[in-house]
Amino acid sequence: MMAVKRGLPEKGPMTVLETGCHAGDGSLWAATIAGTREGSTLISTEANELWLDAAKKVVAHGTSGMKGFNGFLPMQLAENADFGQFLDTLRNEHGIKTLDAVILDQDQSQFASQVKLMLEKDMLRKGSTIYVDNVATKKAKLKEYLTLVKGRDSKKFWSEPHEVSRPYEDAVLISTYLADSVEL
Image (cartoon, rainbow, N blue to C red; front, side, top):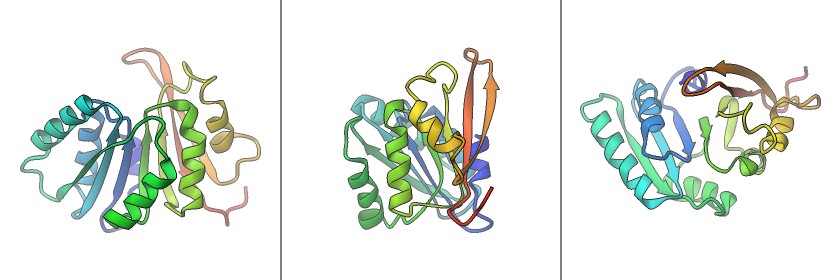
């Protein structure tokens, strides 16, 4: 989970948001990195209640005895949910002010609007990372997102693609938020 490592703040706890956690295998990887910083929080969302229940069990089992990690926040989030309201819930009910690393892994057609909402609500800090997979095989669905983080006029993000060969040939994209003050 290179994106989670890159999103680590210089010191102190970190907050990771993973959307579309499925059965929690990615959540477990993120937890092992977040667990290196005491007080860190991992928010994992899933639309499917059965998958979310599985993720709760997988992460609980995989992190039992892990020092430093005790902040797993599994939440059901429908694919068509109001993402702005979800971010408000994180802030107002759970005290989450910023996201250090974001793993987007659900409906790709919503990624651009979700990132725009994170920016509007100041949920990303300079250096926060966003990880998206399937950027080669689902390029058409990701067009608006890719333009936002990688397009010619994008000055808020530095994006780096990485080719992968397992479980199939594709690419992932890690984007780092540069904040508004950076000129390229």
